[in-house]
Length: 97
Image (cartoon, rainbow, N blue to C red; front, top):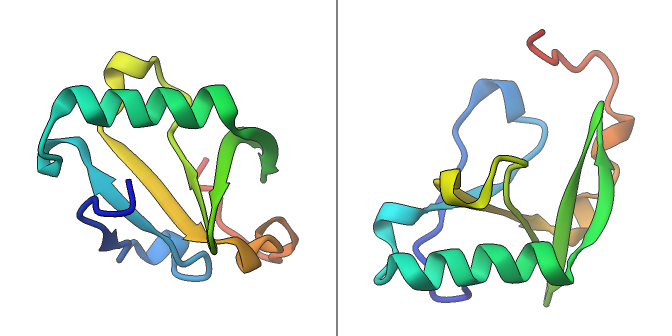
């Protein structure tokens, strides 16, 4: 996971929430990608993210999470610095709904 190819998110929607992602297609092994995604879910902690929850696994200075889709539908793993935990306090955040 630490050696996975990470790309900074450039989404305008989340510019106040800096994070990076690693695409399944860029991993050396799809099997390893799914093992890591399952590890995050099995060993992480459920935390709020605005109107929903994600399961985060903390390792070093980062927290990692997948989206809430079925495991076989996962296309990426996200990561952000742990110090960025005040994201739910942002005002005027556009949820896009």
